[in-house]
Length: 110
Length: 112
Image 1 (cartoon, rainbow over the protein chains, first blue to last red):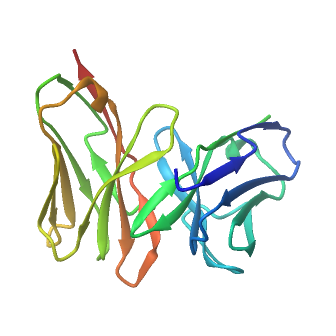
Image 2 (cartoon, rainbow over the protein chains, first blue to last red):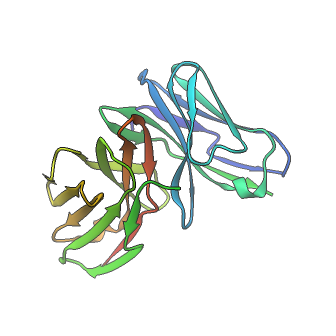
């Protein structure tokens, strides 16, 4: 599983509240990614990181911010959660041209 | 918009038959990958094919790549019940190979 963990695994929150999801890896891989998965849309890239403090936007970055202050952690923040951000969020690392995925976080915004 | 688009969206076949899924993409790539996702789980890497390769095999999997048509196919031979899953293609971009974009996936159901 490439030592990837996500926390929390499940979260229910209310519209307008801030939410932070954490992705943690144990193997010092340079590249880390956040995707969201929704029925009919497959996986969509939100943000990714190519090093500490180096991040870039993906396909659906509006309403999300990220931070990477150390190699092992990549944080995804929803500044003010909306119902459209209800989704399953997957973190991934890249190693040897493959991506390895975390177990996912199911987020429900009421 | 998404780089890769899989076709068909859903596929049901009898166990033992071959399953073929297709992926089309929009811009030039360095690599194309296929992943599998079992229900409720994360994605698992299956195979990678580079832009200078035309065909690649791994066990019961065969992947082809046609860069002139910007398309790829995944063939699973002698399908098994355990192959029931969603299959996704993923591409990078020629000038930005660290940005990996997935398609919407094909849901494959193997009938007993």
